[in-house]
Length: 86
Image 1 (tube, rainbow, N blue to C red):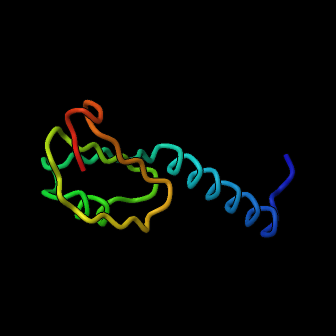
Image 2: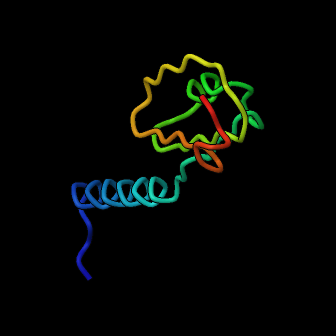
């Protein structure tokens, strides 16, 4: 069986680390944030959200000015526009 020199060992370690990071990233899940359960206002939920998260706004009337700076963020009402007014 051939011996692994230090260069080959280094490459093997790098490949292994990349594989582990890829597996960990694949297991990361986006959060689902509920307003007002998790945050009292839509803006507070938006500020806490990370890219890929979903904010679900429960039924009610919300008088908020909402500014979104996070990319890839979904904001939707729980039961449609007839029961959730923003």
